[in-house]
Image (tube, rainbow, N blue to C red; front, side, top):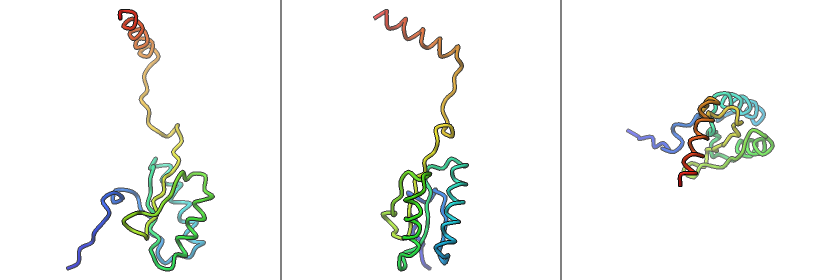
Length: 118
């Protein structure tokens, strides 16, 4: 019985496996995968291209260099057949705590009162 060893750092990230695809097909798949993960607000995704001769890796890295939605990409340290992609998530998509204007005014007033007591 063989055991499958998985990378614990990328196991929870969304994966796209493009083994056996042509370079043109994989670019279309990567484009739609990036679009979907931007909508889902995933900051990191994993692309499995395999080791092989490196044709898919070269094609995908050329595409990722030109894509403005990608902030950074690099080959996984534990597996040469995977590329980890970090996406640019717009500020409007990131979750920020929202407080009302009254609370903000109250906190500002509280801070200034405490400042003058010192």
